[in-house]
Length: 418
Image (cartoon, rainbow, N blue to C red):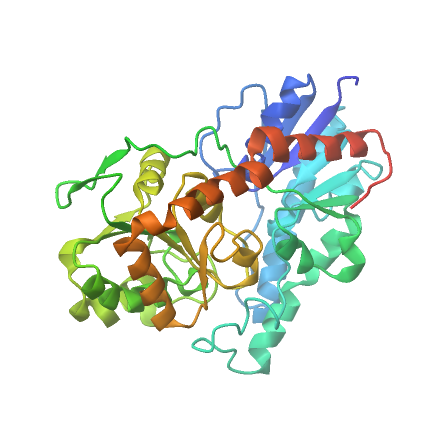
């Protein structure tokens, strides 16, 4: 194939494209990436040319509150289109645009390059009912206006679906959230797990710092990991079960990884964090000498923790499946997951993990206690967990080749088969 120009678009590039962009470089394509100025982590481009867009204004606080999300995305879309137009004026034209449309930057690129095919990374289509919104009765939609706000938020996503030639979604569940008329253009391919790196290590050990012990494989370690500790990922359900788990497992150490910010859903009331609000609710019933909050760990320490974990709890609303679920499985951890569609797609109860009802605290206590107190009973499940991730989600042998095959079809302008 001849040398082609490929443009990646991601507010925090590389994001989900950290493996795909270098792989296309290795095929001798010219690769640029468009991201927001002052956003994203420092990136060792290894040949990817970074282009940046800068918003020219902020969101109008006097606008209708339901329109603010759309206005923010339009501001980003305009800024990205201005940057793209500058590239176009300088004579650079992509043969393919690959991007994440979630923040709005993709909306107007088809006006700059009308004939250039677009591949969109599709994480989740927000709806006012049926998935994450209203799932948890503890946090119901209070009125029809709250539902209307969610409906209004879908506008830019619908416009983006009109402009894409093909979509890429990590799981069947996530693809299923999109309108039926768009699904025939969506191919399900996960981002990929580096199972060579994320693998069991019987010699793994980790220091929890000055206030905590050194832990290693074989210790009774219970783990819970999220980017931020919040209801969308079941933090409240886990913490409320933890006092009784401690009673039933008196030697267990619990390590909780995650920040006190907000990734998804509504903020905690009165300016608090969900992390602290729920901890305050249960702390009098906890032995806090056996509970360690690490904040966000460096990746190598996070990986060691998964390798050490005797039981890893992964809960989520019907929403985006987090990488930590699959990475825990690949590391050989015994995952106790919520029986919600994203998790049920990858975990078969009693085969490669254990599932419990998201709202059944008694079942969570019982399942985790059994896992911690009888680890030998679950050795085969841990092995099956890793095998299932290697077979379905391995980066090098499964996911990356499928992503590149899809790109090749788009570059050759062949028919798309979802």
